[in-house]
Image 1 (cartoon, rainbow, N blue to C red):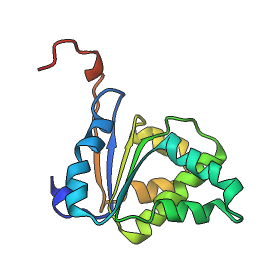
Image 2: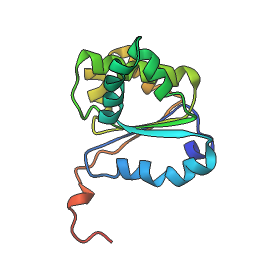
Image 3: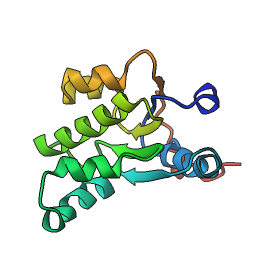
Length: 153
C-alpha cells in the first residue's frame, strides 16, 4: 500500500505459480487508469514477441523499440523468467530495467523466480537495480497454488 500511495521505482513481487501475481496486475488496472496518464502491461512473452516482430518493420536497433515500449508512466512486466534465459532475453530485460530504473518511473515486475534465482541467473548490474533499497520487494515463500484449491472462499 505504501508503494501505491507514492509509486516510484520498482514494486517487485516474487513467488511460486498460483499465488496471485498476474491477478495483482489485473487488480491494479483500475488504480492505474485513475492515477496515470498512460500505462502498459506486458507478460514477458508478449514483450519479446513485440520486439522481435519489430525487426522487420523498424530499421535500427531493438533498443529503440524497447525504449518506446517501456516509456509509459507505469509499466507492468509480468512473469519475468517464464520464457527461458537466452543471452538476448537477458539483455532485453536488463535494458528494460535500466531504462525504468534511470527514469524512476513506477514499474511493477512479477516473477516465479526467487530473489536467489535472480542472483544466479542475471548479471549483478541487473540485480543491483532490481533489488535496490529504494524498491519495494515482496517475496512470498509458499507452495500453495490458489488455482488448485477447490473451496477457496
